Amino acid sequence: MKDCVLFSKLSENTVQCSACCHRCTIKDGATGICGVRKNYHGILKLLVWNKPTGVAVEPVEKKPLFHFLPGTPIFSLGTFGCNFGCLFCQNAMTSQLSKTDRWKGMYTKFLNQLKEWPPEKIVSYCTQNTISSIAFTYNEPSIFTEYTVDVMKLAKKSGIRGVFVSNGYQTKECLDYIEPYIDAFNIDLKSFRTEFYQTICNAKLQPVLDTIQRIYEMGKWMEITTLVIDGKNDSDEELTDIAKFIAQISPDIPWHLSACHPEYKMTDIRVTPKSTLQWAYEIGRQTGLHYVYLGNISNNAHAHTLCPTCKTILIERNYFDVANNSMKRGACPNCHTHIPGIWG
Ligand code: SF4
Ligand code: SF4
Image (cartoon, rainbow, N blue to C red; front, top):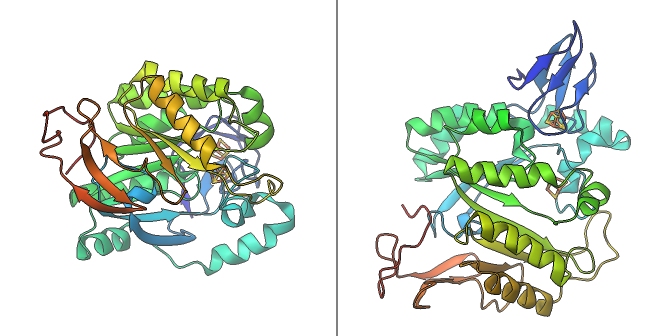
């Protein structure tokens, strides 16, 4: 447990958290919506500091990030809690445990049992195993921002890069706080409908759009993911709206379209048909996006990075493996078109 930085006092014992756009007002002894930031007599504390629920070394392609150090392993960690309550959450056992009254006892017990991963241990693991980046992922990292910054302050001294895989609900203060330490983002744009965010995620759409714009203006590398859900966000109009929004910021932002499987409280849907994803891909390309990728499907012809000018296959992927990378210093070897990203 550690004191939070992103909060202010409203009165002697009441605080307001400023890590995400819920901006919870939190009374003494209570936690915010995410369940991991608790008010102790007027000081907001981060309950999950040092306490990831899981750590793993994964291919960076799994985040997904396709234009960021391709083919390299990334140290990945997440914690309990989340500021969203997505009905389709694939990590609900950890992301929602801290928020469900029925599970609160289990949460406290599990939290006490978790192995500690202080910044020194994470950075030492990465340097010993030649791992060049760290991802804060699995649940929403802005709810444990202070832990991510403590890890990255140390990691930066060893030249390690930081990644946020996020739902994009950070406040401007949060983005400013992490800006020196985080090099790349994958932001979920789950829908382009206010109602979807309200009824399915317990959040709002506009703050996510604002975050995407801000990250682009900060000059950070960013890729966007949309989990395409059968009958929920897969209309031509909505997919076109998302593609247009991304394209007007920059057609060079990669858009990942992933298949959704029935999970958590959304077990009544069918797995996203491949034909839907294929159609979404066409919408993205016709809207002008240069890099559209499909994910969570087999026999995937749209996992490769193609030169947008001459169509040469630059990075060939087989699931999360990079089978071949023919790029030369961030450019197409055939026509020399610059390919945006962080290449090493
Ligand atoms: S991070 Fe948690 S406590 Fe802070 S505003 Fe968001 S949901 Fe509320
Ligand atoms: S934002 Fe991600 S981790 Fe949080 S509830 Fe939604 S799907 Fe789960």
